[in-house]
Image 1: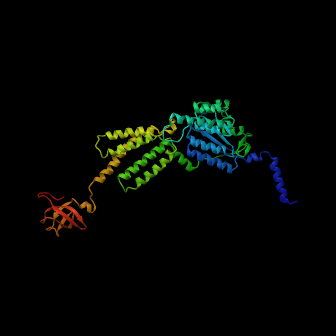
Image 2: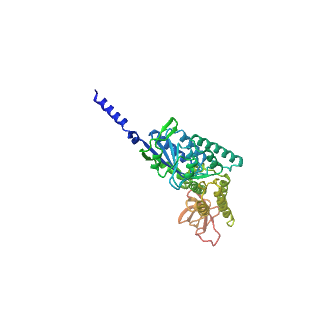
Image 3: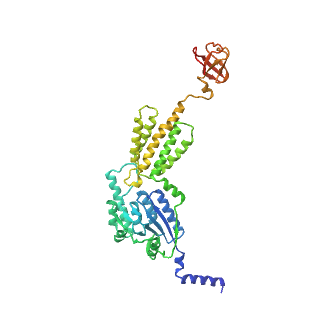
Length: 435
């Protein structure tokens, strides 16, 4: 018998006889999803699911702690979870964490849902992308859609659809123990290791059919958010986006007032583009945006109109109110903090009154260099000066000069025109000293 074939048969027999061989080779991917749910969260979860499928992981565990987020981004995450061929386990942890608003939708979409002691879930009011304040009819439409959406998710996984509806309509919330008792989540476990032991042997339905989880002795692989996702996540913070927009306005205003500076304009343009990346995903109130622009306009107008400070005061009030109204959301994590607004108002007022004011004064200052700098300079006639020729001493140098009226030597003169290397001068009044 072929010795190689014999060895292969022995190895295969050993693998079949050792029940722990497959389990020991299995792996569980773990990611963290914290903070508000937004476009960056979608990219993070989508990449993690794709990687888990490629690596044939037993399951993907999402450690969830979120106050909520955008409904559109939540829907995209749920689509990826439901279409995944790898079971997705949502674990609301650690103690003190919560699954609020969008977190409720994500938790109820999981193949297995678990919560750590001391956590909570609920208050699933929808927040969408938009610029205008929704009227009562539109708000009712959004609410009804959210109710039907979360009920379909709950029914698909055999969870409490009636409570899910109340979480949307009445913002109801539950503790970890209450969530298990009311069939909102499946388990209440203290640690990730305990979770993997408890779900071992659970049968779940994925895209390609039923699958039995083998997680008891699985290798745990912590998947950190990629560096570019971390950067985008920081930039999508409303306070960071707001401050970037302010820096962008400063740079562009300074470049507009003082053309040729280049650096402020380039940096300002970059800051505005990056700020718009974040603000496009937030519910912007255009009335607040107009008040912001009005405030900036009043600050700049103060530089040209002597108002005794009234325009500056009006600009500060308009700027402050506009900043507070800019993001239209009842959720505090989507609003701009006063700790960002107040310094921005003070900095904007100081910038326009000092930096931009200084640039305008520099523009109005008389030219002191080059040929234009000679116009208005005074000196003395060195020789007789007439309409054809003559020589004068101006600005420490001897110049060829002409004059419409004859000028005698040592007569004080003033430069009125520069033609190449020849000056056109006029006589000063008697008794005027040269400078």
